[in-house]
Length: 243
Image: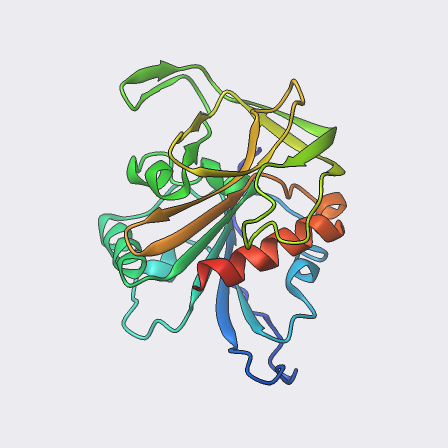
Protein backbone atom coordinates (compact mmCIF):
# COMPACT_ATOMS: atom_id res chain seq x y z
CA UNK A 1 0.00 0.00 0.00
CA UNK A 2 2.88 2.43 -0.67
CA UNK A 3 2.11 5.67 -2.50
CA UNK A 4 4.27 6.29 -5.53
CA UNK A 5 6.64 9.25 -5.37
CA UNK A 6 5.50 10.25 -8.83
CA UNK A 7 2.98 8.63 -11.12
CA UNK A 8 3.87 7.46 -14.59
CA UNK A 9 3.12 9.61 -17.62
CA UNK A 10 -0.30 9.29 -19.23
CA UNK A 11 -0.39 6.03 -21.16
CA UNK A 12 -3.04 4.78 -23.55
CA UNK A 13 -3.06 1.16 -24.72
CA UNK A 14 -5.89 -0.61 -26.49
CA UNK A 15 -6.89 -4.27 -26.48
CA UNK A 16 -9.54 -5.81 -28.67
CA UNK A 17 -9.49 -3.11 -31.35
CA UNK A 18 -8.41 -5.51 -34.08
CA UNK A 19 -10.46 -8.41 -32.83
CA UNK A 20 -13.79 -9.19 -34.39
CA UNK A 21 -16.69 -9.46 -31.99
CA UNK A 22 -18.96 -12.43 -31.65
CA UNK A 23 -22.21 -12.00 -33.56
CA UNK A 24 -24.67 -9.93 -31.55
CA UNK A 25 -22.01 -8.86 -29.03
CA UNK A 26 -21.75 -5.17 -28.17
CA UNK A 27 -18.25 -3.75 -27.89
CA UNK A 28 -17.73 -2.18 -24.45
CA UNK A 29 -15.47 0.85 -24.20
CA UNK A 30 -13.52 0.58 -20.93
CA UNK A 31 -11.00 2.93 -19.33
CA UNK A 32 -8.62 1.63 -16.65
CA UNK A 33 -7.42 4.38 -14.30
CA UNK A 34 -3.99 3.89 -12.72
CA UNK A 35 -1.58 6.12 -10.80
CA UNK A 36 -0.55 6.83 -7.23
CA UNK A 37 0.58 3.27 -6.46
CA UNK A 38 3.28 0.96 -7.78
CA UNK A 39 2.23 -2.11 -9.77
CA UNK A 40 3.58 -4.47 -12.40
CA UNK A 41 2.70 -2.41 -15.46
CA UNK A 42 4.06 -5.07 -17.81
CA UNK A 43 1.86 -7.91 -16.56
CA UNK A 44 -1.25 -6.02 -15.42
CA UNK A 45 -2.70 -5.38 -18.94
CA UNK A 46 -2.97 -9.13 -19.55
CA UNK A 47 -5.92 -9.19 -17.12
CA UNK A 48 -7.99 -7.53 -19.85
CA UNK A 49 -6.44 -9.08 -22.96
CA UNK A 50 -8.15 -11.53 -25.29
CA UNK A 51 -11.80 -10.51 -24.83
CA UNK A 52 -13.45 -9.64 -28.12
CA UNK A 53 -16.16 -7.50 -26.52
CA UNK A 54 -13.79 -5.20 -24.60
CA UNK A 55 -11.93 -2.20 -25.98
CA UNK A 56 -9.66 -1.22 -23.09
CA UNK A 57 -7.76 2.05 -22.67
CA UNK A 58 -5.19 2.44 -19.89
CA UNK A 59 -5.00 5.99 -18.51
CA UNK A 60 -2.21 6.59 -16.00
CA UNK A 61 -2.99 9.74 -14.05
CA UNK A 62 -0.04 12.13 -13.91
CA UNK A 63 -2.14 14.68 -12.00
CA UNK A 64 -3.98 11.85 -10.17
CA UNK A 65 -7.44 12.62 -11.65
CA UNK A 66 -7.07 14.52 -14.94
CA UNK A 67 -9.26 12.04 -16.79
CA UNK A 68 -12.26 13.79 -15.20
CA UNK A 69 -11.23 17.35 -16.03
CA UNK A 70 -13.30 17.44 -19.24
CA UNK A 71 -16.04 14.88 -19.90
CA UNK A 72 -17.71 16.66 -22.81
CA UNK A 73 -16.54 13.95 -25.25
CA UNK A 74 -16.78 11.00 -22.84
CA UNK A 75 -17.14 7.66 -24.65
CA UNK A 76 -16.46 5.02 -21.98
CA UNK A 77 -19.09 2.59 -20.72
CA UNK A 78 -17.14 1.51 -17.63
CA UNK A 79 -14.38 2.98 -15.46
CA UNK A 80 -12.03 0.48 -13.82
CA UNK A 81 -10.19 2.09 -10.91
CA UNK A 82 -6.77 0.63 -10.10
CA UNK A 83 -5.39 3.87 -8.74
CA UNK A 84 -4.52 5.33 -5.36
CA UNK A 85 -4.06 9.01 -6.15
CA UNK A 86 -5.50 11.41 -3.60
CA UNK A 87 -6.02 14.64 -5.52
CA UNK A 88 -9.37 15.25 -7.19
CA UNK A 89 -10.64 18.82 -7.51
CA UNK A 90 -14.22 19.95 -6.93
CA UNK A 91 -14.72 20.17 -10.70
CA UNK A 92 -13.41 16.66 -11.27
CA UNK A 93 -15.51 15.31 -8.42
CA UNK A 94 -18.62 16.86 -9.96
CA UNK A 95 -17.75 15.47 -13.38
CA UNK A 96 -17.25 11.95 -12.03
CA UNK A 97 -20.58 12.12 -10.20
CA UNK A 98 -22.22 13.34 -13.42
CA UNK A 99 -20.87 10.29 -15.27
CA UNK A 100 -22.25 7.95 -12.61
CA UNK A 101 -25.59 9.73 -12.79
CA UNK A 102 -25.61 8.97 -16.52
CA UNK A 103 -25.10 5.28 -15.75
CA UNK A 104 -21.39 4.85 -16.46
CA UNK A 105 -20.34 1.72 -14.57
CA UNK A 106 -17.54 1.39 -12.01
CA UNK A 107 -15.24 -1.51 -11.15
CA UNK A 108 -12.87 -0.82 -8.25
CA UNK A 109 -9.85 -3.04 -7.75
CA UNK A 110 -7.50 -3.58 -4.84
CA UNK A 111 -5.77 -0.34 -3.68
CA UNK A 112 -8.41 1.92 -5.28
CA UNK A 113 -10.32 1.61 -2.00
CA UNK A 114 -7.62 3.90 -0.54
CA UNK A 115 -7.87 6.54 -3.29
CA UNK A 116 -9.22 10.09 -2.85
CA UNK A 117 -9.10 9.95 0.98
CA UNK A 118 -9.93 13.67 1.39
CA UNK A 119 -13.19 13.15 -0.54
CA UNK A 120 -15.85 11.68 1.78
CA UNK A 121 -18.07 10.66 -1.15
CA UNK A 122 -15.54 8.23 -2.64
CA UNK A 123 -16.16 5.53 0.02
CA UNK A 124 -19.89 5.93 -0.63
CA UNK A 125 -19.27 5.25 -4.31
CA UNK A 126 -16.90 2.30 -3.97
CA UNK A 127 -18.50 0.85 -0.83
CA UNK A 128 -15.53 0.98 1.52
CA UNK A 129 -12.60 2.97 2.85
CA UNK A 130 -9.04 2.02 3.75
CA UNK A 131 -7.61 4.24 6.47
CA UNK A 132 -3.95 5.21 6.05
CA UNK A 133 -4.13 6.57 9.59
CA UNK A 134 -6.66 6.79 12.40
CA UNK A 135 -9.65 8.82 11.26
CA UNK A 136 -13.28 9.62 11.91
CA UNK A 137 -15.77 8.45 9.30
CA UNK A 138 -19.49 7.74 9.25
CA UNK A 139 -19.82 9.06 12.78
CA UNK A 140 -17.23 6.68 14.25
CA UNK A 141 -13.53 6.74 15.04
CA UNK A 142 -11.58 4.17 13.04
CA UNK A 143 -8.10 2.81 13.68
CA UNK A 144 -5.57 2.72 10.86
CA UNK A 145 -6.17 -0.12 8.42
CA UNK A 146 -3.52 -2.80 7.94
CA UNK A 147 -2.13 -4.72 4.98
CA UNK A 148 0.03 -7.80 4.53
CA UNK A 149 1.70 -9.07 1.36
CA UNK A 150 1.76 -12.61 -0.03
CA UNK A 151 -0.96 -14.15 2.11
CA UNK A 152 -2.48 -17.52 1.10
CA UNK A 153 -6.24 -16.95 0.92
CA UNK A 154 -9.17 -19.34 0.73
CA UNK A 155 -11.84 -17.39 -1.15
CA UNK A 156 -15.50 -18.31 -0.70
CA UNK A 157 -18.14 -17.36 -3.26
CA UNK A 158 -20.96 -15.83 -1.22
CA UNK A 159 -23.42 -15.56 -4.13
CA UNK A 160 -22.82 -17.99 -6.99
CA UNK A 161 -25.98 -16.83 -8.80
CA UNK A 162 -24.74 -13.28 -9.40
CA UNK A 163 -23.53 -12.45 -12.95
CA UNK A 164 -20.14 -11.34 -11.59
CA UNK A 165 -19.44 -14.70 -9.92
CA UNK A 166 -21.08 -16.89 -12.57
CA UNK A 167 -18.97 -20.00 -13.14
CA UNK A 168 -16.60 -19.17 -10.27
CA UNK A 169 -16.26 -21.65 -7.43
CA UNK A 170 -14.41 -21.32 -4.13
CA UNK A 171 -10.70 -20.93 -4.88
CA UNK A 172 -7.28 -20.39 -3.34
CA UNK A 173 -5.04 -17.44 -4.17
CA UNK A 174 -1.94 -15.71 -2.78
CA UNK A 175 -2.54 -11.96 -2.51
CA UNK A 176 -2.30 -8.89 -0.28
CA UNK A 177 -4.83 -8.60 2.53
CA UNK A 178 -6.48 -5.51 4.05
CA UNK A 179 -8.08 -5.30 7.49
CA UNK A 180 -9.88 -2.75 9.69
CA UNK A 181 -11.55 -0.91 6.83
CA UNK A 182 -14.96 0.73 6.78
CA UNK A 183 -17.23 -1.42 4.61
CA UNK A 184 -20.76 -0.41 3.70
CA UNK A 185 -23.11 -3.10 5.07
CA UNK A 186 -25.65 -2.27 2.35
CA UNK A 187 -23.42 -3.69 -0.39
CA UNK A 188 -24.29 -7.08 -1.89
CA UNK A 189 -21.57 -9.49 -0.79
CA UNK A 190 -19.93 -11.61 -3.52
CA UNK A 191 -16.71 -13.03 -2.04
CA UNK A 192 -15.55 -13.67 1.52
CA UNK A 193 -12.59 -15.14 3.39
CA UNK A 194 -11.87 -16.38 6.92
CA UNK A 195 -8.23 -15.29 6.72
CA UNK A 196 -7.32 -13.59 10.03
CA UNK A 197 -5.29 -10.78 8.42
CA UNK A 198 -8.18 -9.78 6.13
CA UNK A 199 -11.60 -8.28 6.52
CA UNK A 200 -14.24 -10.90 5.76
CA UNK A 201 -15.61 -9.17 2.65
CA UNK A 202 -13.42 -9.49 -0.46
CA UNK A 203 -15.83 -8.35 -3.19
CA UNK A 204 -19.25 -6.77 -3.44
CA UNK A 205 -21.74 -5.22 -5.83
CA UNK A 206 -23.81 -2.10 -5.27
CA UNK A 207 -25.41 0.85 -7.01
CA UNK A 208 -24.56 4.51 -6.72
CA UNK A 209 -27.13 6.76 -8.36
CA UNK A 210 -27.66 5.27 -11.80
CA UNK A 211 -24.32 3.45 -11.82
CA UNK A 212 -23.59 -0.19 -11.13
CA UNK A 213 -20.52 -0.53 -8.93
CA UNK A 214 -18.40 -3.59 -8.12
CA UNK A 215 -15.33 -3.67 -5.90
CA UNK A 216 -12.84 -6.58 -5.85
CA UNK A 217 -10.22 -6.38 -3.10
CA UNK A 218 -7.93 -8.91 -4.79
CA UNK A 219 -5.34 -7.91 -7.37
CA UNK A 220 -2.00 -6.87 -5.86
CA UNK A 221 0.34 -8.36 -8.44
CA UNK A 222 1.12 -11.03 -11.06
CA UNK A 223 -0.01 -13.90 -8.83
CA UNK A 224 -3.50 -12.44 -8.98
CA UNK A 225 -3.24 -11.12 -12.56
CA UNK A 226 -2.50 -14.63 -13.80
CA UNK A 227 -5.20 -16.33 -11.75
CA UNK A 228 -8.10 -17.40 -14.02
CA UNK A 229 -10.68 -16.86 -11.27
CA UNK A 230 -9.53 -13.30 -10.67
CA UNK A 231 -9.51 -12.51 -14.38
CA UNK A 232 -12.96 -13.97 -14.82
CA UNK A 233 -14.32 -11.92 -11.91
CA UNK A 234 -12.86 -8.68 -13.30
CA UNK A 235 -14.19 -9.20 -16.82
CA UNK A 236 -17.63 -10.29 -15.64
CA UNK A 237 -17.71 -7.29 -13.30
CA UNK A 238 -17.03 -5.00 -16.26
CA UNK A 239 -19.80 -6.56 -18.31
CA UNK A 240 -22.23 -6.35 -15.37
CA UNK A 241 -21.33 -2.72 -14.62
CA UNK A 242 -21.96 -1.85 -18.27
CA UNK A 243 -25.56 -3.13 -17.90
